[in-house]
Amino acid sequence: MNYTPFLFCLFLISNFFHAQTLHIQVSGIRNSSGNIRLAFYSNSKSFDDEKPLFIRKVAKKEVLNSSLKMVYNDLKAGVYGIAILDDENSNDKMDYGWVLPKEGFGFSDYYHTNMKRPKFESFDFALKDEIKIVEIKVRYL
Image (cartoon, rainbow, N blue to C red; front, side):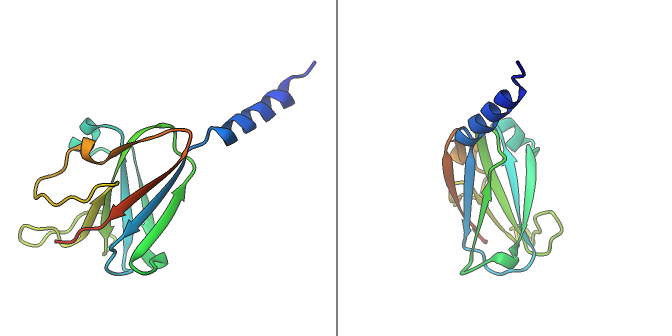
């Protein structure tokens, strides 16, 4: 007996019922120029070394009422932390004045008010078989 169709259906069903869906809501965006750069980290070492697991960029043309929403269904279960950059000139890096950043930044479910970098544990979250909503408020200095 050929079990291939049965196994394939079982695979599809298990992925449907055990999928992670991540909704990200970014608020406080001051304009629609450039893009939002999302860096996904998996632990404090990757964050401290500034080596994200992966980066996603979203054009800000969809900004509505200073907010932008995105949905990702392709992430594996695990621990993540998201750091964003409001890359207003689309040059893929934070631009600085004399000392302070000129562009906005933010972190998953954490509004950073200190002058030092936050710890990964301040903005990490677990993603498992669920629909997870993460809110990020952009801060400009």
